[in-house]
Length: 152
Image (tube, one colour):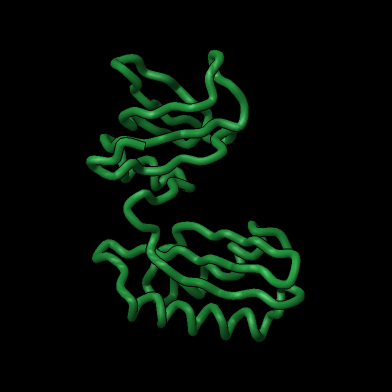
């Protein structure tokens, strides 16, 4: 099962609990693997929220059994340097500082760090040193918020 298929399986269960499935990481192989589920909520996410989501997702995965072999399930909040994975994320965090890594160079560069100025269904605009760069969402490898005061 692909990560996208797993997301489609898990997302309705997480949403029924009142959370957003912010991100999903699946790393399998070797002696086991890990499935990381990141949940979000407008009021924030605490330990009790993670426990509730973990129980629901664990029960779902036990019944559906979409992943062969042994793996650990981890549920947490996206954190301060959260990944931006959906169009809605880019829209919600307009005005914030972001780091973007492209899969392919755009105008000779793959890394952008600046202010997220705008976004639509297909592109985001990141202002770096006063210059706007329009980046296609489809070719973004990773995009993360940069917490205030972070130098990296």
